[in-house]
Length: 247
Image 1 (tube, rainbow, N blue to C red):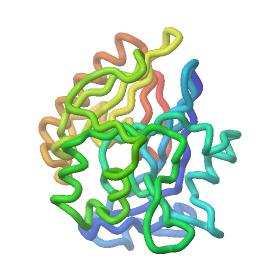
Image 2 (image 1 turned 45 degrees about the vertical axis):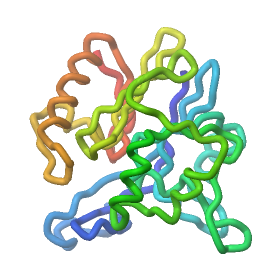
Image 3 (image 1 turned 30 degrees about the vertical axis):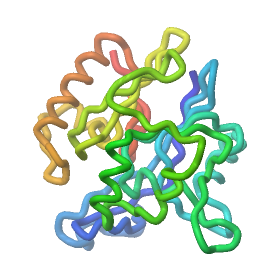
Image 4 (image 1 turned 60 degrees about the vertical axis):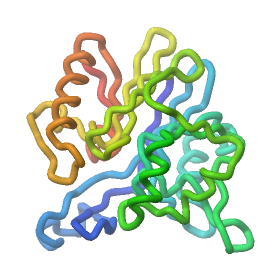
């Protein structure tokens, strides 16, 4: 397998849920509001023997009329139209902002990857509309309820015979994680339940999680299992170590 982080940059975020760009060479973290977290935002593309997988979709920012996510894919040598499956861990705006983009008329949203099949937990989609802003952006997610190329998942299962998904909760009530097993390799993506390498190595309970204790226990479980089996971990919010091979 080939896996590539598609970094959209470093940001700080506080209780306002606004992602503010951060330049480590020029900005001072201590100058940001108290409690600000420093995170990377980086979806991943995973090329397997069967598919070109996109895992989560970033913030959805555009520059010069082109989505940053599309530009990052092209810079990695992948045409966005080649993506076959979009796997969504959850629908918080920093993970799902690139699910859709404004249509040419500018009066609504359309899927950013119309040739791909999207995989979303049904209960997470329902919760996104129930909860709304600032964590979720229902207006940008509405096309997920209308498009024919959406597979709404219920609980645990397997996609295509080799992509395992598991509904675990933790960070948010209906968060799911993925294990991709192909060619003797296992890639694990824990989304915001396993966002950074350092959190895997400590008993850290995050106040921003829906169930911080459960998320911490899940990280410990995955870390031990991954160490024994030699998994590749993909960390969505890790500035220094987006990919880590355990074992």
